[in-house]
Length: 396
Image (cartoon, rainbow, N blue to C red; front, top):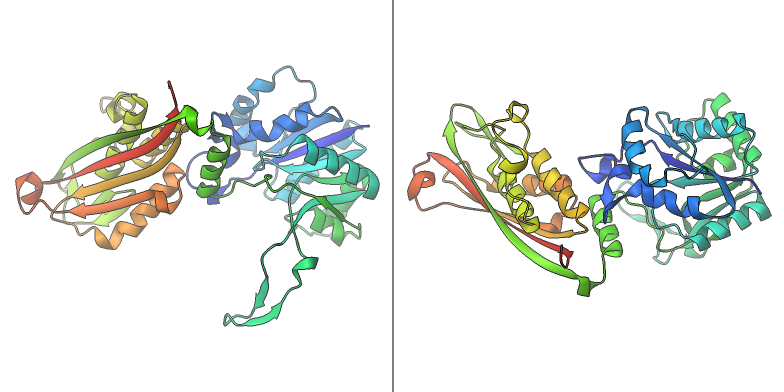
């Protein structure tokens, strides 16, 4: 049987926070895309695996798939489009040109926990029904509400399902449905099952997998790290600190925790002088024993002049994950007389959480004065101290 697996990997993943598109980020030392591809490449019934990627992402794709070099089932990727629907159609057309495909599985690159059993059920459902999707029963009561927030109807959850991928189809039927939608100018389908329904193709459901989560937000990445982490006995907790200070100079604002804060002074610095992000970066690097921020981003290098410090923090967080570690908590204390930190505290926490790929509750920001003592008390500059708590493989 000629079964084709199409992996949709052209999205930007903006809800995952700043940094690389989510399919190219590492979780426990491997990219999300590599983990998503592996079970399809390993399945004996699947002859072709094809990714639809963003046209700008070919170097990232090549790096992520280097571990599969030599596997003939993985074809060269196709350039995706502006929507998921366009990306899938382009992949289908590429397969059709080669005359391949009796059955087709369409899978999200952001789902890296599909297993052999789920793929087996998908193929069997496609053989039996021609169009089927993995689904899970809804366990919570679901209400329909109006614009005022009033409940207008309680839905019968026995009739409700949450839908996953891989979605499974007879290849020719799915291609025909996509072509029909494109010809009709229908480009709003975010799900192949919905497109098939629109085209008049009956779609069935088969048993999904509760573990088959989709990584979308920073907290999803944290959960995925937790699932893939070595057993607790093999992990050790490390705590490290960081400290940074900058003198005030000419300017009308300063950067704190990735947020631009109005002030009657600026800071004298090689980069943007964000003492909070610098201290947090040093704390994370300290948990790895990998030096400090100057080791990796030397002030003598002109490319870092005026650089935004969020890229330093993102680098350090990625280093922890590349080492198989998990960031549990980031904590920073700002030392200054002015400006007032309180009005910007929540924005700083949100920004740091997004950059480091953490849930908001894993980030703490505090501030204190030094009772007018020292250089901060005299208003000559600003400082921050930070602590990072991570779990790393023992012996790492």
